Length: 187
Picture 1 (cartoon, one colour):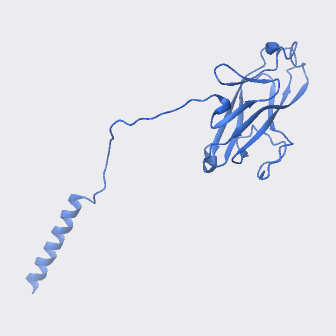
Picture 2 (cartoon, one colour; picture 1 turned 90 degrees about the vertical axis):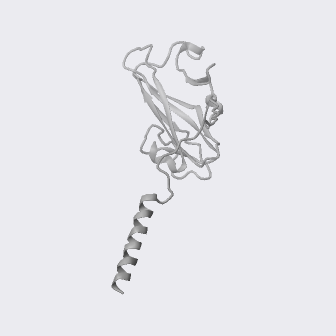
Picture 3 (spheres, rainbow, N blue to C red; picture 1 turned 30 degrees about the vertical axis):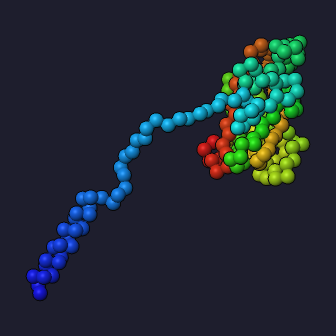
């Protein structure tokens, strides 16, 4: 009887060792053949996050990008903003989203401006589901991004504080950072 138990125990150990050597059927690596990918690069006004010109201070350029101007390049001004002054511009452009991937969060980053620039949500924008947004909310705070409900849009107001003396190149760049729904933490 003892020999039989040893033999059964030995066969069981051998079977367990053999299963470990063969593996569980999961793979370690894999490589596919070639796959097709189609990508459309759209203009700002027709992309997943749309940027629309509003009024006389914004335009979509020939390469499809939104451009803001507060100088004499489009005949809007004879010169520019005054030194040591603050200008408020309403409804400069619109940020919209209707891509079907859930709500969209965004904020606007400014780079290389010599003047102080602030972007805010139009205070008249009162969507039915406006929480957590507040009227006139700043749009430059990465810690408090603006939430666009699907489909949704917000008109963007802009405040420019002129430099202390004339500066023909006080402009800079804006970068809009956006994330859909559950990806808000990646902004």
